[in-house]
Length: 192
Ligand code: NI
View 1: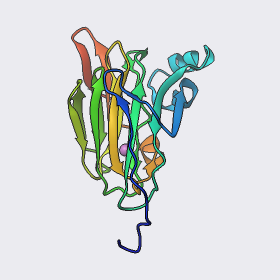
View 2: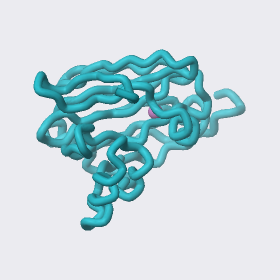
View 3: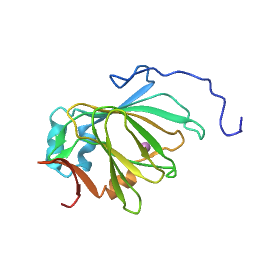
View 4: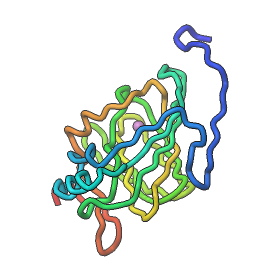
């Protein structure tokens, strides 16, 4: 063993892949509508939802894994369906603090997109469907968007020392949005 990564015993995690549930998570974090107020274009609509019971927007379930280089964080993300104005429900999005770290998201249930951007401003969207994995390369900020009628459930893995950076993407915003249109979900410029 190298000197930087401490001894850690093996363990197992059980999933219900049909339901998209981690059966024995050590912790979960819920993000409610009120937290999402700065993120949507239609501020009145998200404020109205926050004032109307402030429902859960998304939940993340994790295991207690040391946040040290060498470990892999494992999580389930459950993003509920809905719209704020014409924008579909989404997560805040983040860069990794150690920005040169990648992440994989395997879609277990639901449909939607992973919206990604680089610090230089390149923006891409890749679609989620059950059984499809999105590879988020190093340097790309990422946000999940649920364009379906059921929860979008993804299984994520990333280097455990990556740490999440929400501040920079909150300041920058994503240059594109996924909105509902007559032709279905559409990727549009934020200013449009
Ligand atoms: Ni991430």
